[in-house]
Image 1 (cartoon, rainbow, N blue to C red):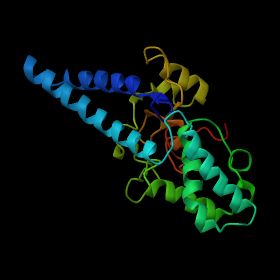
Image 2: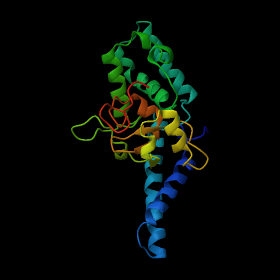
Image 3: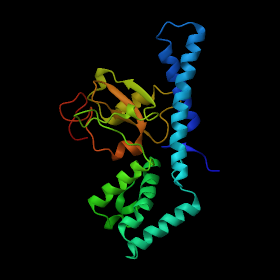
Image 4: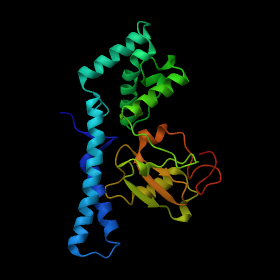
Length: 236
């Protein structure tokens, strides 16, 4: 069976980070040895369950954590999409198939485009592309990240397991470009930044959140890099 990965990171790696984060958090509270171990274990198990749940939804749809669907399933939904492109099927007949292909691209955590990486993508209008995205969310193929109330700030913390790590940039780096900021942030991770992850500039001063590149890339949002915010530097 293909390796089970979620959004470009291995389950073991993600759970290891969760265990370490829980341990670090727990040490800030005065607990007995037994209570401390229980607190860490509970946090670890909760995150493990959330990640396994998202993996199961992806696999049930035929989309694998490696960014590839099972061969038979993938061939079937690509065949359906090609029938639509040829004019033999209606869009509503293949929206589920497009949702699976779309989720595959998001979950790969790689750069992609509708024109080059989605079959028939050039012929899809804005409304259809939006419907595909919403269908992928509704089917649980990709996370539905909400915005904080009354804002365009994404709240990645509302989806279990999406934020792998939080760091605070020193003020001297707030005006630096991404490569310099990310270099400092990556140095804070043992072994470096996991493949497929990126740093999100939160609207909170200095706060950086390590999240999957794929889902971060499709959310039209505001954050620390937006005009009037702590990390705004104009065109990069």
